[in-house]
Amino acid sequence: MNNAQLESRKISDRSKRKKKAMARSGLFGGGRRPFGYDYIPATRTNQGQVLEPGRLVPNKREAQAIKEAATRITGGSSVRSMALWLNDQGLLTTLGNRWTPFNLKRLLLSKTLLGIRTHRTLDPQTHQPVTQEYPGTWPAILDEVTHERLRVVLNDEAKLLGMDKRQSRSYLLTGMIVCGVCEKPLVGSGSGKAGHYERGYICRKVSLTGQTIACGKVSRRAAPVEELIRQAVLAALNSPQTLRAIEVAENDDSFQEVLVRYAQCKEELDRIAGLLRRGIFDERTYVQQRDEIQAEMENLRQQLDRSGTAKPLTQVEPGQTLAQAWDTENLDWRRSLVSLVIRKVIIHPGRPGQHKWITERGSWNFKPETVEILWRV
Image (tube, rainbow, N blue to C red):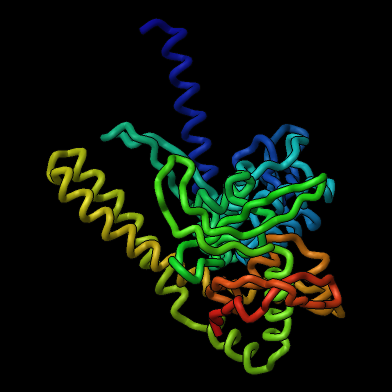
């Protein structure tokens, strides 16, 4: 090795030791400031000696926006809607770019927001990257429980990719509304005549691949069904008994236990995948155990989702009624409000004929008695 290479390695080693020492001290590693914080440069003497190291301090406006986004996402809002909200507020990334669901997810899952300094190194034995964590010298913006809830929600790719048009996000009851004959989910489907477009829920008999998947015997206009659900939800949430039941469910201490078990399941999936790679498990054993763990994780996910259901109520502005909030909040918030009290909506067969249903918001040929609501509380 020549002198130039030797000197280069010495410089590299010194740099690595310095970065590791800074990490152990919980100091910010330098570079671009993280969103939510401002960087205060180090104070030095005229000779360059550091009197006080550089540090991060919360940026009041950005920190508040992070807390708001976290509250809304754990309360049912999509990551996409929160990215759009940040952009509308004029709060761009620290690079000056607009927010997307993906860079917002990366921000909200960052340990920096918990006041934790991370440091990546290579394991000398395996030569694999290892992340070490140290208490940071800056204050946390999010608490650990909120961060764990975000991790559950944001690692659900279907939630993150909520902008996919196939999700039928213009429909209030997607995923909650089923056929009263075959009990299969109804899907949103619009139709138009003479320039008039009307949304509807249908029991789709044949899939896009040509397979028979349902009976196809039930369909209903979306507007009157959604108006009926709006009235039912608002009436239920005006009931003191309903609110007390929600409060009891929200204060359930089992959340942390479920969260720990969910994390253990994820570790078990990684463990059995490693056993498969090393030839200890055969394919059949691996698939069997994987399916069992994933089934348990789905059950735990549902429990975690329910544990945070009261969040939509906290987003109502002071002095604002739920009915007013319904008209001003986005579709994701309305869906989370519906799922707060309703488990399932069943559409039974029936023809409206000349049966006129008249409301303050419109009138339709519609029979409310063909709609059955299964309440959650």
